[in-house]
Image (cartoon, rainbow, N blue to C red; front, side, top):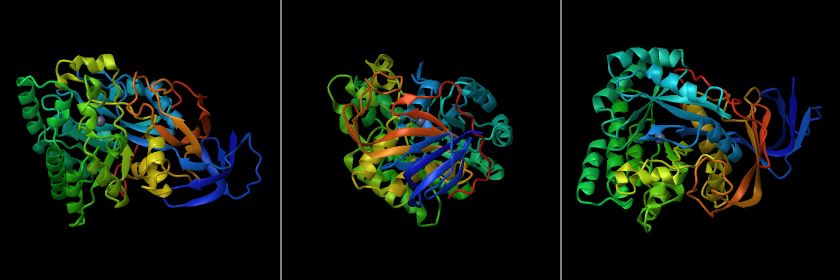
Length: 462
Ligand SMILES: [Zn+2]
């Protein structure tokens, strides 16, 4: 048995903050106490640092086949970049190809990840073609594959989008078997029409991406899926919410005591749509769906976090290099949608959130780790620091300043949307299941270290 003792740190969970030592045996936290006098194979002094639960990013797309190319991070490179920034666990999306089975999608994603991921990983199952055959697969996906979350796209008409009847019937099935529905909320028909109109008019620069996807499209679809969830009683989670109008639909639902789980992503808190209006093709870097919004939406999202309307800040990490983005140089609709973020999420959220006084330390832990762990059935194995939990711990130095750059990041992509940003606070050491995975910027684990995580049905969603 191997042992590791972390001394003199300040332990922070979603609810507590106290000085303590953490004693780890093999992969799990064995004991927490003050002034622990235990001999260990290795002792780390965390004086002056916070100990946070390892970050969970519940929304990533490693090696995603999309719009004629592939997202540039593999499960190996993407999860390793995550570990550098303090994210120890991801939930990626296994996406059904229309006409194929859900099981085929899972096989394909397991092939990409198993034996390759460096960090721990789980899958959401994205249902793009719900029919009688798909319906029959649901119990197996939940009980055998250990997947309790199912995603639908209300946009990307023609290859990912499903209609309301499919969503409604899928929800009814999930209620029976203990699943949760997650949804990309944008009105795909409206957008499809607006995109076509711009392109037909020769309006093809990146700025038309945002102009073709106004907030009302997202608000309408968010309200619609909330109503479908209300009618069916299906637990639900809205991915990557970006704007005040959509958040208002959530707030309204709380008035009838409906629980709606909401995710936003770090870029929607920090970047705004003026970036689409830069000269040339620069705006392509942040072409993603939904698009970046206004500064007032950023304020609404920060407020939504503190009002407990938003439960998780993910990334939608889906990087494409500039030569891939250039597939859309003559037509914004052909720019692969997505941007990198997994490595920078935790540090940006601390720097812009905690250090700037927008959120508390406990809230930081809740939205970067605990909330997602609870919603998706990983808690308390993941998402907190407690005896018996996986020893996924980051040692975070709040005093260290550093500058983000594509020259030094570990993501396999040739730009960074936060190039030149100065960040307050840095992940010094990342511990995954009791092993020092990254220390002072040096990786000590490699390909295949990550484990697949099964998640149980009927999770007690918080
Ligand atoms: Zn996504």
